[in-house]
Image (cartoon, rainbow, N blue to C red; front, side, top):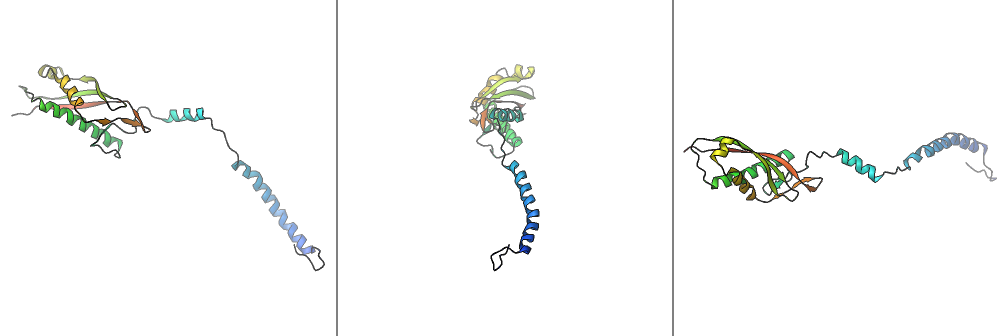
Length: 180
C-alpha cells in the first residue's frame, strides 16, 4: 500500500492489497490448519513396545555363534559356525591322536555330539550318537571326547542382541583309522 502526499492510502493500492489478500489469506489459513498434525504426538506405551519387540525376535537363532580366539568375530554367522566346529573338532581329534589308539580293522565312522554351550562359554556334551561297533572297539571313547572338549581353548559364548546366551548344536566327529 502506498501513501499519497496527503497521507491517505491510494485506491489502486487498496484494490491490489484486497486481491492479494483473497489468495494469500485462505492459503495461510489452510496451511495453518493442516500443519497441526505435525505437532501432534502419540504416546507410546513402553509395555506395548516391549511386547512388539519380543514378538519380532527370532529366539531360534543367535546373532553370533560361540567363538574361539582363532575365529573372526566380524565373519558371517555361517563362517563363525564353521570356524567354531573346526576349532572344537581339532581340539577333540588332537586329544584322540595323543592316545595313540590301536584298532585291528580299518575304521571310518561319524560320532554326533549334541553340545550345550552356556552363556559363560562352558561346553558340555548333552548326548552322543556312537555306533555300537565303535563303542566295542574303543570303550573309553566318551571319556576321550569329553577330555578333548575340556582341553579345548576357552571360547566366548553365543550372543543375542549383544547378550551372552546358552546355545545348543550338534558336532559331527569323523573317526578314520590310518592304515600302516
